[in-house]
Length: 375
Image (tube, rainbow, N blue to C red; front, side, top):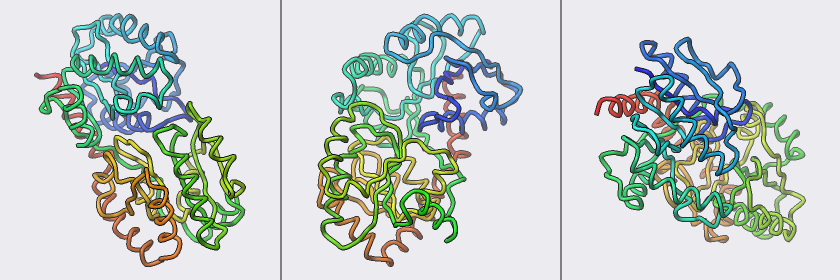
């Protein structure tokens, strides 16, 4: 079987959630199934590290997909041509974008449809593109995989897609996130927080991640108790960050908030392992990989009680309403003051995180590929 794959999000040094999903699953699938051929379709020069095995043929297909108009050209004009040239039996798209202009079987990984519920979080043209094309992609797909039962039900309900066509394939967790020693914690705190304890957020600076709510809750936390605990925010700016800037400038304790930007994998390991707790309180999430990474690192988690997050967090996190500043603030106070609570969440986290692994993810995804190819 010849399987063509959209690998445009495999960008060296810039892997985000879907990029990690792509890397971790395809590195295993291509290695474990040498009897099949894979055509990896990049939209810019690629790194050799993403050519995982000898049965992978990498190609670069222009133009680079940096804008909705270029997305359209790439998927509707260029992809059908490549699928025909390489005589692909199936096209797999880890980011959910498909081509409406081909008869070849297609498998879409639609991680969530946050844009259907929160279109104002996105630039106008991107929101229009997503909400016009993704319902059509979902109908066009021979099969869909998604990363939580919440997202499966959401796609089923919102797009009227038969649930039997949608497979749940949970994300895994990067095994580099492990508990760190006291010495490593000290080094990380010296480097990132002036040797102070800190709460941590990891993710893109996107409106649905509720950074503004977290900043306000942190200010309230600092006002409520006597502490010099800091807040570290790790991740790159996306768009519509003016509200974050305004909220930050209006904070009483803004000097104790550290925006690190993007960090290397090793720096992420250090900064996560040394944190007092992960504070992850988005309004909408299809899975929430940082939660599992924190559990793997032996770090307690404060987490939203919305969308997919209770499904992923189980009984191992401290839940809050992301719309309630007081609930987030009170959770931070509890984590700060109650060592027994922290230790209990860490122990529960070690149990919960074992439900997720990239080996399981790859096996389930391969099962979906086989069903897609044979039905």
